[in-house]
Image (cartoon, rainbow, N blue to C red; front, side, top):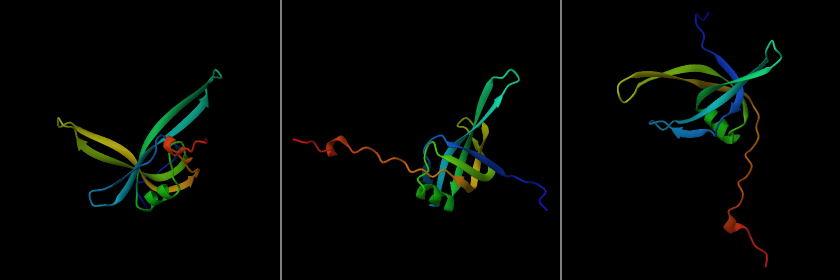
Amino acid sequence: MRLSLNHTRIRGRLGQDVEYNESKSGNPYARFSVAVTNSWKTKHGDYREETDWFPCVAFGKIVDDLKRHEICKGHLVEIDGRMQSSKYETEDGKPLTSWALKVDDIASVHYVKKPPPPPPEDEVTKSD
């Protein structure tokens, strides 16, 4: 039996297009943020809304899935993963810690392809 557990599941919308990159060793990875919005009704009958942002990082097969399904800003995603910390120092030597959700699985995704970009104006044919 596990004595500790680090498992996070979120469902929300991508806040920007996925950024693809490669590590120093040549392994592909992807970074993106997911907005998770919670809403509730107060005891006075007012509706309130609060949004939390989760920075995410994906590796391996997940990167291929993101590319294949053209996941982009606004897509609804459900992610399983674990919170991972990164420690670093600022230029003046101050230690900092940042957190990101390391994606283990995209359980369900609203796959909607990006609309094609409009043709450049110089390619638009003009009738005589």
